[in-house]
Length: 505
Ligand SMILES: Nc1nc2c(c(=O)[nH]1)N[C@H]1C(S)=C(S)[C@@H](COP(=O)(O)O)O[C@H]1N2
Ligand SMILES: [Mo]
Image (cartoon, rainbow, N blue to C red):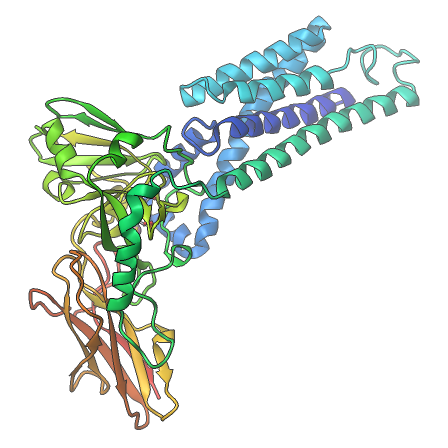
C-alpha cells in the first residue's frame, strides 16, 4: 500500500539522490572521478556506432545532452535507492542516526565503487546523509505512522510534516541548482596563463600568418588564423573534462623499455615551438566547416617517445584522453607530433583539450587527442573509439578546396569574387584551380603566401565577370603535384572526396 509515508520517503530519497550527485559534482567537476562519468562513459561505449552517428547528425550537440541526461538519471536513482534504504532502516529502528549513517555510508561506498577513488565520495555522502537525517521523522510524528492515534493524524501534524518535507526537498534542490551554476561559472572563468613566458613567440607567429594572408576586395574570406571562439569542436562527451595543469600528467605505458610520467611543469620546460597547424574532421562534408587553423604552442613528442624506448611488435600506440577517448596509430607518425599547451597565444582552452593536447601533422582531426593522459605502446594493433564505430580516420587528410556562402560576393563593379581555403595536409597546397563553366576551362586562383609550417591551409581568391548563371568548380593541387580527385564520396569511412561545385549568378 502506498500511503503518505511512502510517498514522503520516495520524495526525500529522490532529493537525497539528486543532492548526492550534485555534491559529488561540486567536489570533482566533470572529471573521471565524478560519479556520473563512468556511467556516461558506459553509455558512450555501449551505444552502437550507427546510433552515435545518427544522433550526431540528427541532434547535433543535443545528442550529447541525451546520453548525459540518461546517465544522470541512472545515478540519481542509485543514490536515491541508498537513501531510501536509510529512511526505511531509520523507521524500523526508530533512530534518525541510523538513517543518516546508512544514507551517508552507503552513498560513500557507492561513489567510491563507481569511480574507484574516494575524492568526491564525501561530496556525495554528506548531502545524502543531511537530507535523510533532517528529512526523516519518527513514526510518532508522521501522519500515517501506524494505529489510529488522534494526535498523529491531526491536521496540524499533517501540515507540519508536509512543511518539513517540502523544506528539505526545496533545500536539496536549491543545493543542486547552486552547485551546477557555481561549478559552471568556475569552469568558464579565464585561467591565467601558467606558461606566459613560453608563449612569447606565438604573438610573432600570429603576426606572420596575418601578413601572409590574402587581400580580398570583399569581406567574405575567413581569416588565416581561426579565432578560438569560432574554432570547431568535436567531442564524444557532453562536458569537457576539467583538468588543471597541476593535476595533469602524461604516462607512457605498455611496451616500453622504461615507463615514464611527465607532469605539466616538466613539459613546458622542454624546448617550445609555435606551429601553425590546420585541423579537419574526417566526418565533415566536402564543403563542411569542421576545419580550422591555429598557432599552437608546444613541444615535439619525438624526444619524449625515444626516452621511453618503444618496443612493441606493431610499432603502434594507443593514445587516451581524460574523457575516455582513445585512438590508435603508428609510432613513427606519433613521433612527428606535437604536445600543445597554448592556442593562438592563449592557454589551451578547455574545449580544445586543456591543459595538453596532441597535434599530428597531416592526419585527420581524430588523431589530435585532447586532455591527453596516456600513451600506451602496443604489441598488437587495436581499434580506436571511432574505428570501433566504422570510421577509418587515422590516416592522412585528403585535399580539399572550400567555397562557403560568404566566400561568394558581388563586387561594386559587377564582378563576382570567390574566396575560400584549401588544405592538403603535409604536402601543402601548391595551386587552386577555379572553373566558372562547370569544369570545361580552369584558371589558377591567387593564393596567400606560403608558410614554413608543415601542415597549414592556404587562402585562395578569384574574381570574374559574370554572364548569366555560372557553375563554379574548385579543386586544389598539393605540393607533390597531386590534384584533388574528382570522384565523389561521402565522409564515411575515410573522408569526403570530390570537387566543390556552386551555382552563382
Ligand atoms: N579526448 C578527445 N580528443 C579528441 C576528440 C574527443 O572527443 N576527445 N575528438 C577528436 C576529433 S573527432 C576531432 S575532429 C578533433 C577536434 O578538435 P577540436 O575540438 O579542438 O577542434 O579532436 C579529436 N580529439
Ligand atoms: Mo573528427
